[in-house]
Length: 386
Image (cartoon, rainbow, N blue to C red; front, side, top):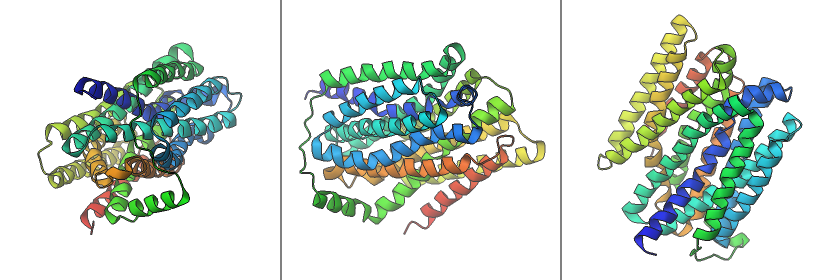
């Protein structure tokens, strides 16, 4: 494959990988609208968000073995088709229970697309070139997280929450067509068997560094989704802002992640340990300042959003560093390794989002306290990594 073809295919894979974040996050500004339309309560409506996270986390465990055993293209195409059908039915869902089930299915389906895309990137690049590609993977995913709530807020405000699912369905259909005609699968398939599954799982999970880094990635990854679990009600219901306004807040936070990713790429030669220490220090100081202000003066939008934006920016530096460390030793099991680490990320995110759904939607202090605990846990893991 020549350089141009490789770059074009890599761009397509980055776009498809970003669907994971888009599918999960695009409905966030619509949660209050969905609650009203389907006559639900706040906690149950939040599960329309959390169910997709859970499906994405569980699905990636299965998808990793499937894409290594049966190739990248066919599982991705099947995932696209199932996702299109689930999005269409979600737009006409008669109840919140039905919508939650469909969101779980959407998470499962998009897991095959994301895992296949990340594994295809590993097939295309290796060495330092792959570490740079990992940063582009996180940037593409961040773009999905950044733009989807922003666009979803506008769609909800002007056309209703149902149209959010229809618009995403069209986008996935376009990606499916490009995948069908542009991608020729070159992966050497592995015979799928119980021995293959247990041997691969044992090799990866038995690696102590992998376990430690996967746990760190999971905690870091849960920060922004935890915000998206609580903040739509905090900002829209309690503070009285619109879905469009919330979309702008989500855009700012996603842009903060992108700034961190780009900074990591710009300072590629700076030692990883130094970047980790500075990023963790910035995160902890930001949360402490936010807690101090909110405790003294009560709920304030800027005192919530600015500290969280700084934390997210620091995580944009940290996450690709940790991800590269987790995946680098397993070039022969690329699909399974990336599936397991991202599955850990999203299962951790599902747990944190579930806990966040019980937090107050009239005060930012519980959310910031949760952030302080999570970041302190990461700092301790880094400190006592041996």
